[in-house]
Image (cartoon, rainbow, N blue to C red; front, side, top):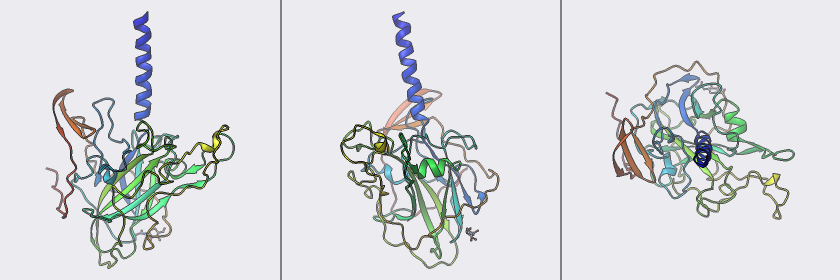
Length: 327
Ligand SMILES: *[C@@H]1O[C@H](CO)[C@@H](O)[C@H](O)[C@H]1NC(C)=O
């Protein structure tokens, strides 16, 4: 009996773990002017953070000082395809969590927070990330247990994972990394630095772009990742549920300040949502379970059997190299 009881406890704990794991999201595809460029094409999908079936490749980064803040874990690894665009093109990122379907919940309903898009030459350098779009809290909550309306949950998830941004007018041709980001603030009433089991959850995901044409506009100086966000930023430590507390003594912050720099004046003021074509295009195979990375330790496995471990250290190049095409 006692044995059965503890099994039930273990099962319940495992169920909670899976729920937590399933709360996360990343980008499955990018549409250019409504045309789907293909699942996982040109997208630097993060590494798995544990073995099958509990690890997942869509986990958050929580340490602001980590290189993973740049493009998530494995963000330095190029993918074979690069998405070709022109200034003025309308891009639609398709964020999901379990599957690229209309019924997928995109991100857990508790993960309220801002969303933003940065652009950097590829590879990034010091202060090379320029913010071209952002959205934070756009409506106050009304009544109890009402965190308000946020970019992640009330806009992107409500629109089946679609995040819109436009390639800046006249942008100079070249290779760029688009860094799209969602932030979950559901545990952000304290910083990860003060309490590592809580803190804001960052979901950066980078896309390889080649801008074509004869544009002459260069990106201005931007910010660095890591570096752009600080442990005491009011946009990083923020209690989304504060307004729901009845016992609080300190007044709640209602206005929300999105972290990072202001949006570049050269970015488009409006980000239209364009009509999207069907989900077609080539599909790059999703990462397999043969490797996962936990606290920089890379574990390699085959058919569930661990083969060995090594240490992962991001290796960002300082010059652009064309990615190796797939065999
Ligand atoms: C992008 O969207 C805007 C606004 O809807 C539209 O005017 C423009 O023509 C679109 N750009 C392209 C290249 O389709």
